Image (tube, rainbow, N blue to C red; front, side, top):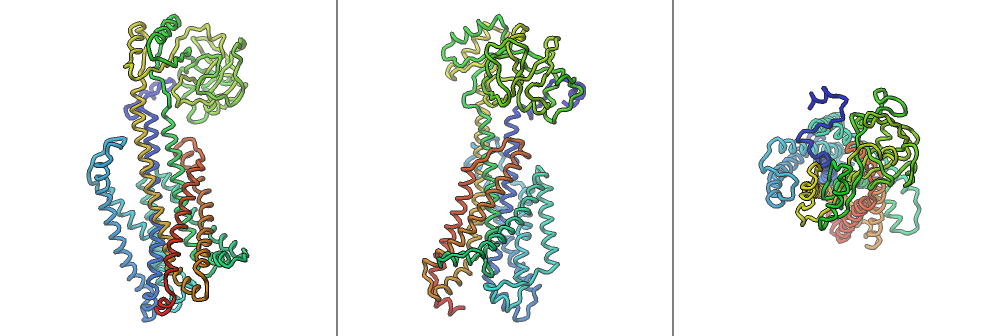
Length: 613
């Protein structure tokens, strides 16, 4: 194919090999592949957030152990190594479990749902992907666990006893900074190096870092705003005060929740757009046959055959001719510079037709259509996207060569063409008049019930052997089956991120459970009722959830637009119902987890807890 393109550079040929036999389906598969990459990266990020919150909660539960070791003279390095060993063993156990599950789940899934896959799959154990998954798990755990471990190891014993009330100002030592940075760089390098689309992976890593910074600023803004709010209701005032008090969990909770929500919103919007894109490729009422090369003198006989065949309907025929575009606005096409992606329209012959009415599946977006009885200088209607690529607008002229004769056509209007409807349409539609007298043929589409078993196709072939009939129903059914399975795969893979995000939400809320138990004990001792404490905490969770939801909705919308528009090269549509369901559902989930944690904390009796302290 390369040699043919080099030998015939100015022809209108389109050369495809077997891997490009169905470009629409190939595009859908490519989009699904990119979406799977996004799901994997998002799951990695969400898992990292879960590691960070889990290690922080785990270290808070061992505050007394760390304080005791420090009071006995243990240096911070020894404490860090002790807990690194413990976390490392937990990480290793988790990685082993994950690798084993990753090896077994596909085989089980294929046995149960193999028929739903768009392509046949081979069951087997693939060591390299499993090893890469294990490496991802180890590096992700290291990148997100090292920081909270180092912070806890650096706090002096006396300060750690009161860390629940006053966070320590001790920083993380430089070696830990460097080690954490090296692990992050290595993780990012492997992500980019092993990704199918490296630019996409690089964009994802940069966006994740920027999102983290934005949510840190969002947490600071929420705390500053909470300081300025003055409320008379005691529970509400207490809940708002919890957002900016010393050792407030608001920054950590907002960042963890916000990153998770942004990831889920992005995945949900991209999944919705890809699903619409894939399912939109299937016309609801596609024609059963395309008929080509119908001569003028055969048109009446062809129409009679269609009418005499039982069950046929929706006959649509248009004249068809071939013309070569030789000049745009008077400039020869050899001297014209057009936008990338639109050069194909200037190579070789183009399909051309004429019509008094707006073609099916077309929407005029600029200019006006000519009257049905128009009989003046030749006009043309162009595809709006092609006109934009050529730098043309209404009123400009194009020169076409039709059967050796140059004809200037003035652009009367521009159209958006719904190609997916599989109706007959052309990028160039001329006004009736001059072109009606040029030699041309006709093409037609017809619908026929599947039960007719191609009776029309046999009748046309017997009476008009030069007419080519193409049966599209079977092809469309095969494409529909593949596309439907791709859509199912999208839903299944997207649910993986949603499930992991739900677990992270639960972990982020549970991370501060010990702190809330202590607060509940103190507040009940001071006379606060359960209803007041519960209301205060729900106000706190609601403010954090609302702030995280608003920021995540904006960032998720922007990120999904960037992926769909720049990477998938597809039209992006804002899907408010999907965004609202994702963000609203997650916030409600967080409030539910918070309420459950609150109820558990309120059940703790003050006297035993104070005695144990």
